[in-house]
Image (cartoon, rainbow, N blue to C red; front, side, top):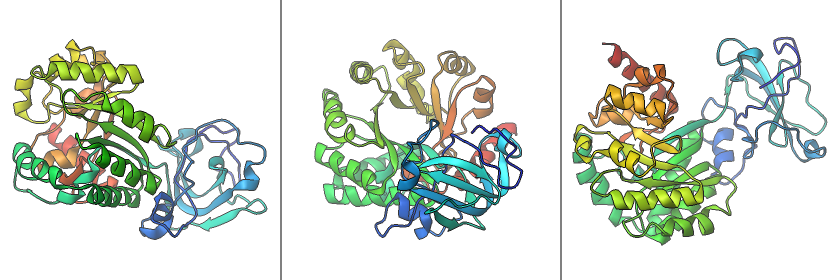
Length: 382
């Protein structure tokens, strides 16, 4: 956000470029209806294309849709110049949106003619959360195998269930998970999708698109079928404005040729590679980081999930090559996988985000995830 004037003054307009989540209620279960109140959460909801950043709305945009969120208990502007502290907190604030873009932030803003006004007292207005790592189909096994560690859970729940899910049920499970995520304020999700039949992929993508969620479809394939990613990218994802692609891989020296082929597809399409790395102690034997480095995937176009059992040398390599990491504290605790060395990575300047990691969480509550993050930080201190 940027501001020409002090936003703490009454009714001061600003011209921010950080999006909030907001939108009128609709009857269908979608991003708009859930965030607008169907889920009953303390979060003000916003337009589906409110992720547009910066720039100026078209001259007639205000006539198409203008929305004023009034009297929020707290507005998190994410700009220290527009509020208190690092998050730019503004109490008793208003947010004006024109055609899905933030036009003003302040107190006692006047509603333009024709604007839709939402009274949001008692609620928080803030940018939508990004869930950096999930497996949405796993709502089918949420809470299952809770006494197992990672390897036991994979064997008895994950691998045992996925082949049994038909196309209709795939839609239902993914749609349910996506709505659950929206109910907690998640507006963007990176979903690591296991190798599934093409017709199941079609239902998976349709379930996500039907909710209005912005999503990254991180697609894994069976060895030798890496070319299917091109088809899914062209036919299923390219037509959708809120969808994008990553190539999901299984890193390891034993399957290095398949990893190389997937990385080549990712480079061809200009997308990131997404891999689970060192989630369990036993992953060390696969030499995952060595494999990723040998195929040329170890860099800023790599997203590593979990990254728990990194040595200090590997932490330095991650920072040096600007690799991105997804931290899943609740899943890691549930499966007794360990604790990511997040403070050490943070000191080295590594870019990290939070993820739920599918069915190993009881809910998609981002606030619970943040509390879990704090528990992990405390664990690292002890």
